[in-house]
Amino acid sequence: MKITKKLDNLPKNREQTPEDNSPKLKIIPLGGLHEIGKNTCVFEYEDEIIILDAGLAFPTDGMHGVNIVLPDVTYLRDNRDKIKGMIVTHGHEDHIGGIAFHLKQFDIPVIYGPRLAMALLHGKLEEAGVSDRTELRTVRPRDIVRIGKNFLVEYIRNTHSIADSFTVAINTPVGVVIHTGDFKVDHTPVDGEFFDFQRLAEYGEKGVHCLLSDSTNAEVPGFTPSEASVYPNLERIMATASGRVLVTTFASSVHRVNIILSIAQKLGRSVAVVGRSMLNVIAHSRNLGYIKCPDNLFIPLNAIRSLPDEKVLILTTGSQGEPLAAMTRIANGAHRQISIKQGDTIIFSANPIPGNTIAVVNTIDKLMMQGANVVYGRHHGIHVSGHGCQEDHKLMLALTRPKFFVPVHGEHRMLVQHSKTAQSMGIPRENMVIINNGDVVELTENSIRVGGKVPSGIEPVDSSRTGFVRDDVLKERQQLAEDGLITVAVAVSDEGKLLAIPETHLKGVVMTADQATFKQQIVKVIEATLSDRWSELSRSFGNGEGNQIDWVGVRTEIERAIARLLRRELQSNPLLVVLMQTPEESPDSTASSTTETPQPATGRRRPRTAARVAS
Image 1 (cartoon, helix red, strand yellow):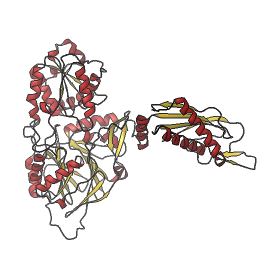
Image 2: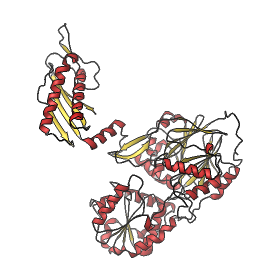
Image 3: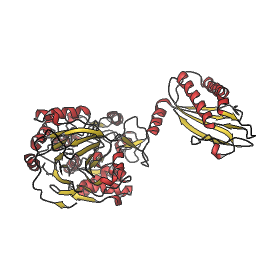
Image 4: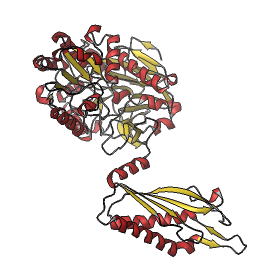
């Protein structure tokens, strides 16, 4: 796993043969395909695996109580002994946010990545208590790292919305595979670190076997504007603001944050930073030299009251309307130290990620209602994408001249359009594949094909971050949100009679009938079920041991009968919880769903309560 500085004899493309029995390189995306986020890709050759990035995604509206979404990494858990290392392309959360969670399930011997990404990742691993399960190694432009016997990886500088971003050239036994990572072509980068077109062209000259390329803006014609293009627009808005200025953007957009801080310094505004992630990224970026500004530019949040409003700039998280982010709490009047004043100017220097639009619009509305002047939207020129458009894609294809092509990092329509762009650049249609998460791309010296599928999907993480949310739990939460909850408490005797009138409680259930009438219907259904099915659920013994009662079966029949009533009367599907009290003696014969063989119920018994959830 040595880092070197020279790489000779790059493999060249070979002519296709009629029969291809060559060794296969498997490329398996576990996230980032047909979606935006949780970018994770596996490269496997024989008994060795390397992982490229391991990100997270935001939950959808239906994922109640879910904080983040990770890819299903069952395949990596099952093949943990093959894992030789990880390549990190840059420090965005959708590329490194899942690593700490994965390390709780399997070790990764070594993780290579750029300085900023490794600095951010180090803090995450320390906080999660898994820093001892891997080794972090930083790389610089054109560094080459060997991982295992079969992979030699070169880091090639690119330009993106975060500093220290890289494309990687992976040298394998079947040829050179280039993965662009996230990129756009920025000829005037804020940090002065230019895209290394020369090295890409050298690979293209010697022979790139396969290109995997970022497809996020594949539908957008032209080039993506330079990050520097937002500077004059942001400066104009801030310079004409008469009161306080509040700016929200992605914390990880280091170049944008650098621009905002530079403008604040130029205009004589002191900066208060709000939001843990924003503070963290600024601290690491200043330590590494990606953000340059004096210490006295920053002031504590509680000091803003001592300054005139026209001398204050508040830089905060919350550009996506996240419920717990600072800007959202300010809009809701729930922030302890900041409240909106008449005349405040608030700048949203970010576009909503798909799925976040409603949350962002609601936040903007609330800020406006409190008297703020909110500046947002594409027409103001205060945000540019970090991803390349069609002309950026064409330049990447022209430089690398790949034999095979796989569009990645995007929704299906983006992948399709990117493949069309590649065809316009001379790559035959049969030399590319459009894939989904879990597809196994088999790449040989002479062919590319989808050769199977591995487990894929999502692993939602609860808001408490204590563990993954199982599918059945997620379904129950959705059911609660849509149709409410009904609990029914039932006490049944040995003779199959009700010991008391069942208690029914409804939460969040919409009904047209009177509740008292509905509860009476439930009682009648339970009585009818006990009367009709008791003989089947209770067997008599002639040896004096009395009756053996299948209490699990009793509860199941009651649940089914009530569920049928709910569908018929409510025409909805509320979550149903039945609590059954039975006069039992043996703990082994409780009405728990774990009971397999109920014991005979005889003599004087103490009541026990069992619960089961049924949909």
